[in-house]
Length: 441
Image 1: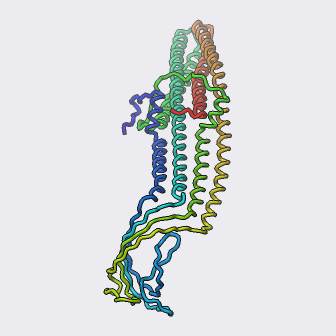
Image 2: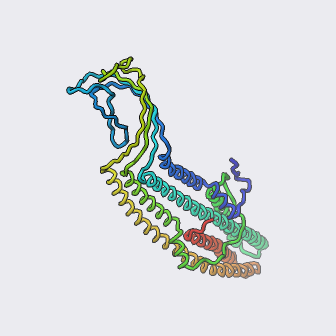
Image 3: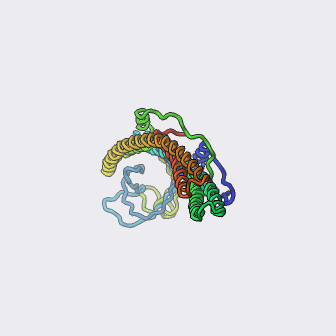
């Protein structure tokens, strides 16, 4: 793994490149794609019922031999064993005899009255649900990458503010020291300037740690092998948002949670149909060639040599079988339970729609609030800088004190940090709108 070290500058990614990389490499996306491929493969399993089935049989058994002349075909609906062509007697003979069978057979489904189609539809619906889960994973990944990207940008801005504040505080400390050394200022001015410098140094150290943490979160969101990943500079999204009614209509149709709930409902309905269809008849063609032998006395002709242990008597058969499980109470019970699960899935759709609309309205309100706050934050930052300039001028001219200058510095730093946070909040509010309206990349 090419992990970045703590001393090397981490790789920098733009938002678009980070999203593209995450959609290709993020483990959450890779796992969702794997689940979709598995579901699609499973959906093809029932269609294999239309292919011929070939099987072999080898038997060695000991049993009684009280015969009838019936020659049935084995089928999944009725298990009726055939006793070989031995004599028919009025009284049972409890003497066991050995028998052997060696056979090769083929079965081909002719018509299944929609059983296979119903099973295929149920598994296709599950695959469609997996497709919606992949879509949700993509939207979640885009949102997570966007949030982590702007968090790095905000951490950079906070670090820039903290670094600039520390630089100014050091200059003020040096200026105060010169004033104290020359006797123009009392010693308390230098002591206060030293304390302010130490405080702003701590702020810069914490801001630097916050940036490293944000980079590591960004790297994890993107799915990069590096320990840290930096966010390249880029413009903030300023495209006008759609109107709230249009966005609500779009969310009702495209919200991933709603689509997942609808897919689950369709899958459950298809499962109910598949359960009902399992009680339908099945028509198939069957045939086999075999060698067999039995040690019991035959009703006519010689008894084969080997006492039933050598399958030397050849046979073949071919026939058409209609198999119908006429009464299967467990099938009806499973179908009834599946219908109740349909009711639950239908209710889940309504819940998902309600939550989607609520999330969208909340995202729009947060966007309006963040935009309005950003205007106020810009004005506050401008006024705080102007106040600082005035305080610095007074301090350098000997009219102001270190306390006054430190207050102005604190006000400016807080205003600039809040401005950086406000920009991040606006970017994330717009990203939440995009997530709620399911804008895909």
